[in-house]
Length: 495
Image (cartoon, rainbow, N blue to C red):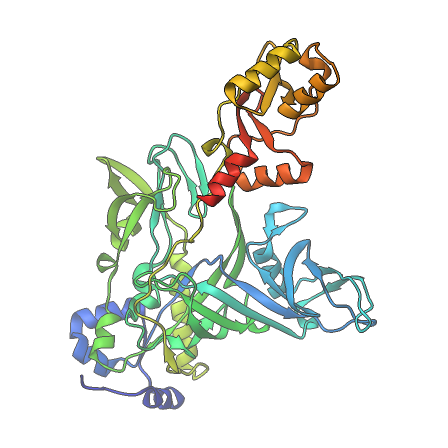
């Protein structure tokens, strides 16, 4: 493949003010009119942009040391807890963390926006106290200028494309894809298609570790592939200095019934090194496919309702089962265009230079589900319970135990509700001491029970804790539906 230019050459043209920079939308027309070869000669940089909810985002703070110093064990910013397991006065605030007093109305994303807007927030921290960090509590007000560092580190941003969502059930669903109306009442989608950075460099030739980007209105960097990176659903891990960012490109938000997030603005310049890259930046929405999945089916691998393109999604309506369904975006196409235009201006003013990645991100990756052991529950191992009434005689109870070769007899009332339990040991003691009346005289009335859907590990802990060898299994109204014994659990463990 013929190389048209290098990044160093492009940066020199940017420095001289002679670089030809176009947005991703403008490049579609250039490629359509001139073809990829000629477009590669004419254009030096294509700017991209995306602005949407990016839940896997957050900020590392260093608060500085108080006097006397404190080793923060727990810390809250405006009652939103941050993670402190990194160092004495460092903490990571995730955008989806909820306020302990305001719930879903306010979260980590809102705290970050407040700080960027120049507002002060309450810092509250507690600690266990050490010889070198004796302080155990602190409450103060801080602004962004008061912290030593505020480094935005986002584990998963800038999804290359995203599956759209709908709902076949007959009730409203509140999800991370917004509110989904019943009976295929609407479709929602995320991502901006042909403007999206990774869609304009699908082989990740110019986007990788070390690529300089526009992040929240400031210069940032790609530091690796994002979590859940699974091309063509690629993602990026990015970082930048929060102190240099703008609230225009960072917006705290709440998805009703789901939680808080942060809308993040990201723009990435694509250096046009050759015709192949030029061709890639000519991609249009009608060539970018995704799927509409059904959130009405409550499982991890939700069924695909329909394959669609971003052009269809952006039209505002799609057809499902012969009906026209309204489609709405979760990402802002308007702000994404503005980001691409803003980045273009920064490059044209020689305020932003390009950098090639020092390491490429993977082109092939498989996103694996969580591997977990099957949870065995009590109802899978319980045996049939033989229940008796409290008026049953000790003699009759002993005969039932011998005839059925069991050691435990739940005692129930006329409605089948558990009121006690009798064991073979209770019967033996009664016979030895001459008690021949009803079992009401010898039964244990405070009975430890299990529920049918309870994990067997929980049942085993109950038996160990109370030094017993069986648990009646009851429903929510304490009707006896079975019995689980230590022998049942031992057989399962051996198996």
